[in-house]
Length: 291
Image 1 (cartoon, rainbow, N blue to C red):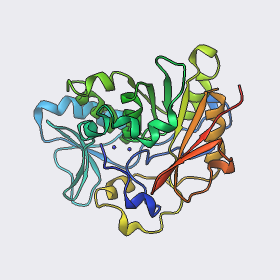
Image 2: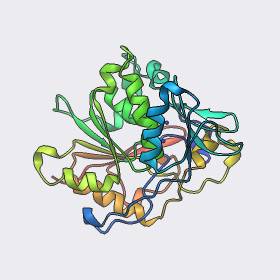
Image 3: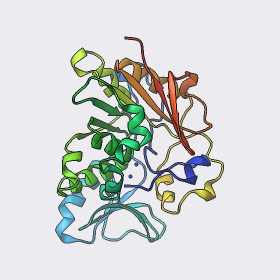
């Protein structure tokens, strides 16, 4: 999914933050043409602004969702406004905004981000990364701010729409434009994208970043109210997906795979990393594939 707030107690307790909250649902067969198709979640598009009606109509058509002037109470919907696209229900609203991340990308600050430390590669002037579980793009933004060209893969069409809108708005902000110019959104199953990138040496990324859904949300009360909107779309992760996702990441033949996990969570697909960088709530497991 989504800007969002920094990692907080929700992550530590197993709660899912907005970043990368929407993941693939079924194991891939290993062949691109057999990758499962994901249906859009039940949602509607609301637009009471005549100036944005054409945009709202195109979005509704793309999602296969009804277009209404005003959503009924209790209905999860995408609201098209002059300020941008938002996910909303019952007065709660989530509109990603990369401007919220500006304090984290200042010189001398961005270098201290654990993700940036984990993803760092040597001897590459303009490294390439694939954020295979992009969500609302916060981590991808941090990677781009640290110098990576980032391919953002998001399978959920609603979250992809929110991310695309946030990127478009950020492109008109002089402080954000140089960063988002290095971010490229691909809507669809990231496993297909990863396997395609590994077919030739020229397209292999330097880093593949994975932020799969944290297992076992056991303290949902710790999750902020806004996150309820995300959870309305969230699909459970099949444990078999971990094997598929890691296999696809390896198939891209990167220099490094970086995996975000809960601080006490198990290794992805049971694979022990080469090394880890840990904080209070999360850790980044780094796998260095043989070359």
